[in-house]
Image 1 (tube, rainbow, N blue to C red):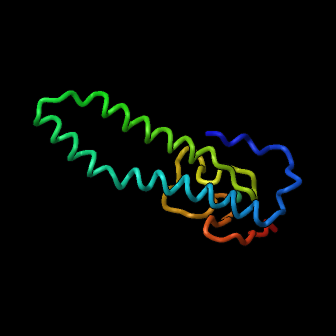
Image 2 (image 1 turned 60 degrees about the vertical axis):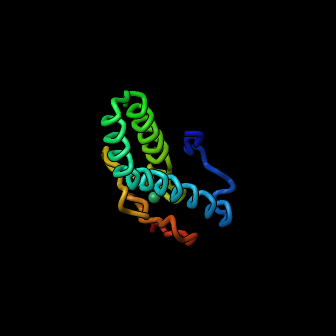
Length: 117
Ligand SMILES: [Zn+2]
């Protein structure tokens, strides 16, 4: 969420170290949301235990949903350093399965720059 829009031309854009750093940040945003999905069974069990103990689960549900929403928004706001479009978002859906830019194919796992031809 702290990522400002990258519309203006960036003189440092061709710097490979900086590019790799940006790609790592994009990859980490995805990892956070994927990890969040993996905690879903834990969450379901926790809710079940709390309900059996007669506890109020409202706050836990809201916190969990807020964390999800925060990570999803963070991920959707990541912009590809190669094509400047939203890295994971094509139309309205987040692409959680791909480690590549949905527009130009730039990978987060490699610092190699995809040429746009
Ligand atoms: Zn791209």
